[in-house]
Image (cartoon, rainbow, N blue to C red; front, side, top):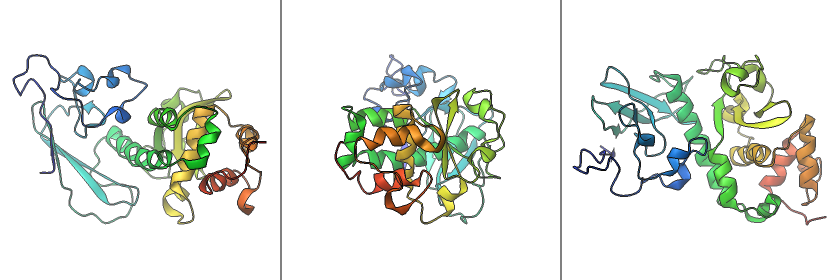
Length: 276
């Protein structure tokens, strides 16, 4: 047993809250759900319908427990299994090894898989944000902590053809009216941030190269997408974002790359150049 949570009622407290702050910390709050900012509330204050097995995000209680769900990291290795006994608390158990092929086995709910993808990508990009270095200048006076909050508001989705949920439409996820599937949206791209009539939406769809191409830098690719959301800049070929970054030393074609990868390569180089 590696992790254990008890709801405060079970500890005898009459408040319906934990006696100490949620160990996930404020960085795991979801700005789309203000209730999550209360780190003393368990499962968004709704323990009758939700549980919080990881300390980071509440999910629905399966109706006919006990059941076990497992999910994988970005390399396909099983990293967590959640066991749901009937009742209001959960254990996270060590997961057995699993062959790193295909989509995760044993994921019984779409929401579980989405959560595992989001958790893995957030860990990567938050690590990069914690060490922004000279790239802090592109925030225009905002702090890395501000950018971290934006990252926490983003939903990262696996758009690889054949992955769980990749046949969902953009509209079903983001409500933007676009009936293109996630797999089609990111086909030929490493990652795509969804939009609605020119407005950048907090949804990033990840393509197969993000997982399979060893030359792709996940941390700076994700930072690139987070900047789209934070600055609400994109445009064809990322022209609006490129124009903005040029005042901080970015030059189109940086690193001898074309398309939009020059932004990622510039971020990887720690944003060289001075403000023009």
